[in-house]
Length: 202
Length: 202
Image 1 (tube, each protein chain N blue to C red):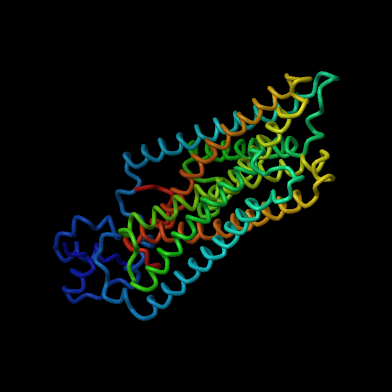
Image 2: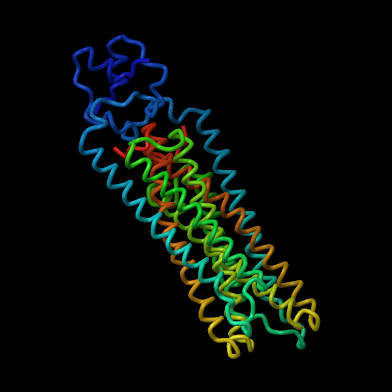
């Protein structure tokens, strides 16, 4: 197995100074072939689906938390730090997922990323990671608070409040799960970008 | 800027079938040069340092949590779910960090990984990620519980219990921080392994 750069050197030619950086190669002619375009579209559709599910879960979670204190006798959710944290984290993730869905649709329809490619792949991956940690942290704090409330008298006097908090937190965990999947895919895109100099994964 | 494979093709030679996979190249002769060995040693020492700090934080956190109920009048920490979770997560991370320190010392002293290289890089990265999520989740739950206890009467009657819980959780967050740094480095090693077929980062 001979590498092309060894062959080039044997032919007495000076190898390109960039031969250590395969990601600097201009796109080879087969790169935009139909097969790889199809694969890319399927990959982008998968990312879009994960974003959509994550958006739905987070939006539902924040709405459930926001509408938790309708009855005048029930405790108010915004009196609890952890519930405020759950609401804020889910709202942030919902907004972020909405933005990423727009970016994803833009990419599927126009074939180019919204930001420059290197910014886009790192932006996606970094925000996926940070927001996944944020959301998990909020949901764990909310879970701990709900367990304490169940031990105290709060849940016996106003059971609906606790049930709705449970649902909101469970939806938040669902959002975290699919944000984690998106994070795997966007991490894969970062690696592809580092290897190929392009987000295409072939 | 001509790529070497274009030059090879112009010379009438068949390019290697593996020219799309620069990570399949056999190691170039300069690979194990003194400079790259020095860099690798520095990189491994950095990983070892992060593991050591993470181990110290997690061990201290679990010990602080474990010794939290000495006074007979104070509440017992193992009656609280979230505190049990904090203790368990920190103990797991401490054991894992200890194992990874052994693996790191092995690698620095013998120049080879403990497991086969591909298993080792993915093992490190995967466990770093999962345990970082676990530890963050435990610490968030613990924080939420401590905030509730501060609102209730528990902390006024036995203040030492709350202070020691606070310290244990803060140490846990420290452990999470350095586990996250380790995760960045081991992710970097995974990418290097995918690109080069070796954990060396040159």
